[in-house]
Length: 491
Image (cartoon, rainbow, N blue to C red; front, side, top):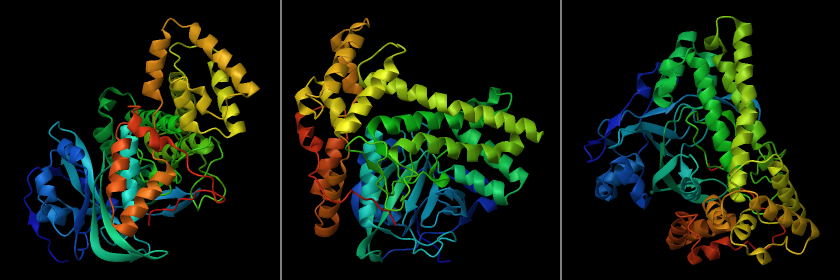
């Protein structure tokens, strides 16, 4: 292995706690150098938050780090091993084209994984070239930053660099590397890997590490591993509800893409729903609709069950008791998710208090939206600003009756109409990363080297609840197409 140049770069403050886990959890390996790295996009606000020097990152030495040609001081690059149920089928996986450089400790004392995606082959590449194309890396940058602005837990993108090399997919495309930042890359699939091929001691090591890293409150828990399961369930219930509330469709909810931190990870075939339809699927490989919008809560429960199964040896010495503890915990997911979703939907309709009929009111609206092909985001936007003439629902008997019930419901709470309006403004985004807008930005960037379209889009998406006039153009729906929109895994 050729020794890489180590750069003492101002702001880097790396630790390597994951590297202290058993060696079976990962493979130490360095990034594969690239020919001619060039910085395309740097997330300056994130860099500042992480305590990194913007000037240093933009320098030749900084770009070399973001490309994997050099290493920052303290880096111990490694590829993580994991497994996963992909579309319901178990497989050995691992970071095939990503390397964890280390964990950046921020000025506030927070810990974030710094990972290079597209940095070359690893022992887990499964025949892949270990590289990434510019389009998918920019797409992940756009969507992950949009999710962050929407207030949804997510990994974030620090930078995208081109490599000066080409990758071959359906066509020859410019190569790129994304620097990804996450609370961690611990997954349900990490536990599945250790459960399948590790020892009981290694499983306990991983569970203890996860508790220490993400759930410091475990010290007072009678059963810390049950506490771990319950906390992961709680975070996933919150996360999936937030996905549903903004019409986000992940597209590939395999167990290796479920982060125990409760963050959204892996932005391959994801997209946001335009016309409301629970059966909406964008991913080209999801031919059966397993990961359709309406199935996401169910699939989350299924994935959490797989996680619970890995913890059985730790939950209780008696197998029967362990299973009961796991089942009881998993049974609570549906109610937790439902409460989060219902509270979020009430807020989207300006409702502060609770009445038994609220869920019927909400579901009736969604049913009418589905029947008439109403846009999900724009419908709630028009309700927020009482511009009902801007929705296809206006003039329909069902919607007129529903609107009367909604107005009556609002009148039965103490809060004023102005207060309801403010609640709706904070709960209903003015815009989402519309699929046609994202594609427009990517085409300009990849085919024409024009990054201005992407920059304007990112600027608009950075304040989704501003409801400013400048955002109006991004709420315009795409023109009708004979072919449904399709997304592809970012390979």
